[in-house]
Every structure is written in structure tokens, then in C-alpha cells.
Image (cartoon, rainbow over all chains, first blue to last red; front, side):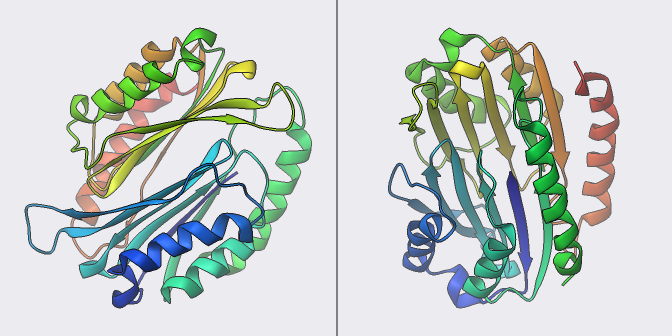
Length: 140
Length: 140
């Protein structure tokens, strides 16, 4: 299950705060019942144009990951929460919206590995259900 | 642009080779015109069940990333190539299929940040084009 959250009109101060993003990557896995397998890494990036900069952070969890890329001057960020297990996507979305005071989101929830020879139907049902629940929040 | 490749029936020996995956993460950014902002990290993961293990690696590139998660006992792997820029997704797909001798793939190509106030139409056109080109390889 791969939750993709693109957030607009987020809080500038949070998008530029390396320690803040490190902490989110550090505590979020446990909050959504995932197991970290390394400490997070967060880096600052500067492009050629002065407004082209941001923070990029990553934490590996058991056979999956959470990543965050911020674009402070656009008050925009990308969040990916990817797990081989099913997790509470609604809780994760709320957590991230609150973390960064995101005003507008674009959300995608992907099924992955659906050709696994076992548990396919079950996983597919759960993801379909999650998807239905997401319709309400999708354009919020 | 976010390219998602889930690969089945891949080469077991490659899925268990940490140095091999490190090297792929190290050289791929340049091959698809991206800029690394840190060296890659690759970790081995062991779950509760003996068959539940694999390698997870990632490399941060300018405001984006490449990640690989392998599930050797299932001969399965997940690859994400996510960039704020448009890149040659067909070349990237071919590269990854060749790297891991993947026999069957599920591919998704996502547009992200499409609400940016500039370059939207252009980016959208390019991604639509890429998508059309992908139809042929999608179920290969």
C-alpha cells in the first residue's frame, strides 16, 4: 500500500525546519504501526535558482519507506508512505496535514504487489475500502 | 513525475546482492540526468518469518529520490523513481528491467504537483505522451 500526499499552502516555517522534519520521520513509523530499520536522514538541497531549494528526508521501515520533500518557496511538499503492509491511511493523512498545516492536498492510494499469489483478494478489498473512504478527503 | 515499477520473477542472485543494489542507486541518477545529493544507503531487513527478508535502498537526488525494496524469496521488488523534473521513463524502465532481469512488471507513472501555477500544461502534455508510450510495455 502506497500513500502519496502532495500538499499545498503548507506552513513555510515547518517546511524549512530540518529538525522538525527529522522528528516527523523519527516518530511517524511507530504512530502507524511500522518498524524503523534505520534512523532518518534529512538533507538540504539548493538548485541553480535561488528559489529552488528545499529539504529532503527519508526513513526506511521494514521493506518500505517514508519520504518527504519540501519546496518552501512554493509552500509545497511531497510525502510518500509506502509499506508492504496495510496501514491506516486516513490516520496517516490527518497526521501529515496537521504536521505541516497543509491547506490543500492531492492524495493517491496505490495498490502494489497485487500479483502476489496470496492474500490478494483480501488486500484488494481493504484498499478498495480505504479508497472509498478517501473520496471525501481527496479534494479537501 | 513519479515512476513506479513493481517487478516479478526477477533474478534471485541480484535481489540478495547489497553491493549490486548500492551500485545501481549510485550510477542510475546520472544515467537519467539527475543529481545525487548524498551517497546511497542500502540495508538488509529480517522479519519474523524466515522468508520475510530483503534489501532496502535509497538515494536522494535533487528534491526527489530513487528507492528499491527487494523480496528475494518472492523474486519480487519495488522500484520508485521520483523527480520534480520530467525524465525519460522508458529508459529508466528498460534500465531497471535489465538490471534485475525482471520478467514481468507492473508500471505506474504519476503526475505530481500538477497544481503548480506554472508549466502545468507543458508537464501534463509530456506525461500524457509518456503514458501513451508506456501502454505497450505496461503488461510486458
